[in-house]
Image (cartoon, rainbow, N blue to C red):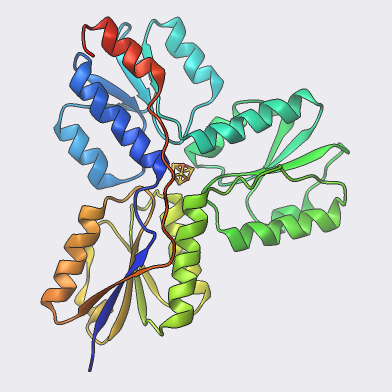
Amino acid sequence: MDKTLFLIGPRGWCAGVERAIGILNAALENLPSPIYVRREIVHNKNVVNFYRSRGVIFVSEISEVPAGRTAIFSAHGIAPSVAMEARERGINIIDATCPLVTKVHFEVQRFVKKGYTVLYIGHRNHEEAAGVLGEAPEKIRIIETEEEARILNLPSSKIIILTQTTLSVDDTNKIIDVLKKRFPRVELPPKEDICYATTNRQLAVKTLIAKHPIELLYVIGSKNSSNSNRLCEVAETLGVPSRLIDGQSNIKPKDWEDKALIGLTAGASAPESLVQEVAKFFKAHGYNVQETIFEREDVTFALPKELSELAAAHGKR
Ligand code: SF4
């Protein structure tokens, strides 16, 4: 039988992750060690372990960073109180929050100022949601499921729906439909909050499944990566079993041995080197490796100015 591994594109690092990694690399090159990062710079075990091996110190809270040192905020964003605490303690901050997450923070500020209650669709235990919630805890209601949307009580008449950037497009639309039926006057932001990278990666998986009867989808990504988990769900919803793996070492023969057509993608925080390792593995087992790119991405984000300011203060650049 002909065996094919489809490499689905777009996949892997998005512009927000490229920017966060670029910030960390520049900080390592130009600023005194050690560099501290609050939480995981991006949700990927391999990436975090790589930087840990280069001397980066990952902390859970800003209180763990000594005064006068440099701390980078991760791509997922922070509550304003975290930045305030860092400034008060004399920590040099570099903010690697993805600009598309920052956009949602600005939307919260703008709508709350106009007297709106924000209905935020997102995952309560995700750092991105915690950061957004921190903008105006008393004015934001967080919901995760259609069921929660069905039983929600809202006294306010001015309601805006905002969302986490890495959700399932389809599940979010279902929740929004419920909310619109229950609260006909709810408003949506002028521009979609689920980001281009999340949308494109989900659409690419759906398109591949529509064109080729794959029997299994591998998603490279860590367990705490929201957008990677959503890619697995997209496949499962369409009847294709999926496996979330950190890399080639997690591949189990019982999963793929009897499968001729397999898809491979990667969440927005998984580096391409891991994809290529898995592709090499399947090639060695007799699979044709076929690139199937459904959309080219050309989004880039500039590095923040505080990075060059800090570098200049330390005599670099
Ligand atoms: Fe930004 Fe989207 Fe990437 Fe998250 S997944 S870092 S929101 S571009």
